[in-house]
Length: 290
Ligand SMILES: [Zn+2]
Image 1 (tube, rainbow, N blue to C red):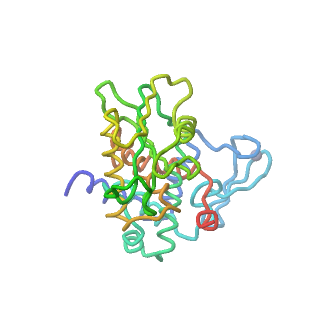
Image 2: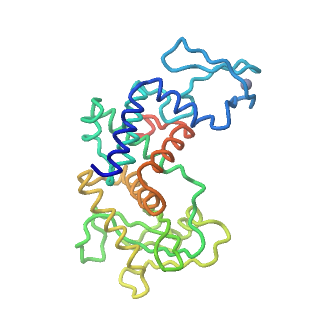
């Protein structure tokens, strides 16, 4: 058994009771002690008559559930299953799909699918992390790579990939974003498309930014195009391909995994992801399928 698998087994065992999961959530949510969401007071009474404890602020008397303001809010799935899902997502090198999660934690396919989308949503809310330093951006295409025509095939999704580059020329942090139709001319990303990418994905004040959108330019950043190819393969192998509606969420998960792998693995991803999940208000099913 590898070290990673042994740690995973231990953690699955540790988070096998609701009490252990509740304690972990409390420790993550209030790592510096309780803080009231309404008045900022730092003392509360714990009300334990429900399955998930309520906290009543000692100053303003506002009561809120431990799960208020987290991705688990409103979910009928037990915390044990949530922790099991977070552990699998973090420790399986290529992640898990809804069919695998359904089998692992005994929930319906729809529940597994929704849980994974909520977790992906939390991954993508790492907004503070913008590209900076030396930034290189390249256009690329998700989907059928064998289309020789200049016209866009309906299954092709043009996108931009950007990366902060290390001194050694390696991508250190990546972002992959689909390009809106209004910023495309067939497969070509027009300048307004790259402007939007830079505005939202690159830290203000970054000066060394280069962007290539011509498909066969000798200046293109091949390493970035290769990463998009890798993302396309991962999505088609793991999820049997994804239509345009939810594609961005899967590209975000792929980017998150790449960015985590460069810095951390397994346990760090689990710690980071749990923190994200308790600090992000949930995404509802209706908002997701909207
Ligand atoms: Zn209060």
